[in-house]
Length: 155
Image (tube, rainbow, N blue to C red; front, top):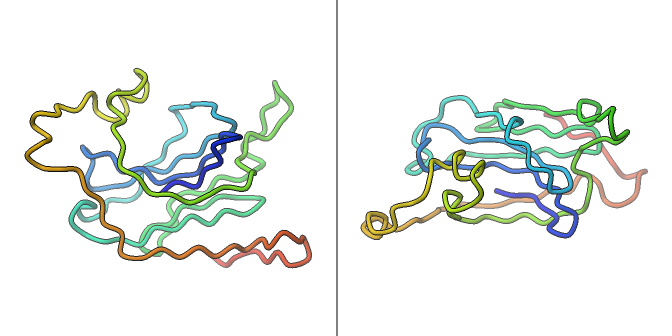
C-alpha cells in the first residue's frame, strides 16, 4: 500500500519484499529523497503471500503510525524529522493518493535492487506469475481541510 504524491515526492508505505514473506516493511520519503536507512520491519506475521492481514497507516499532521493486525509497530513524529542542516521538517505533508501495485524493484538502481533481493529471473518467474490479493480497502480522512474539524485518531 502506498500513500504518495508524485508531483512532490512524499510517500508513506507498506512494502512486501517477495523474499521476506513473514513480515512487511514500513517506510516514508520526503520530496523524493531516497534514504534506505529508515525502513522498519513489522513483527513476525504468517505468510503474507497466503494469508490476509489488516494493515493501517494513521497519518496526522504530527505523526505517522504503521499498524498490522491491530498492533502498532512503528510511529514517526514530525518533530523527529527535523533536519538542522536545512532547517526543515522532512515529514510527508502533501495531499496524496492511495495505491496498490506489484513492481520489479530488482531492476532499479543499485540501492533499490539490493533492497529488493536483486534482479528477477524472468524465465523462472514465468512458472509462477506475480499476483496480489486485496480483500477490502477503507480510507478515513481525519483532516477534512478545516483545522476546526480535525480530531486526533485513537490508536
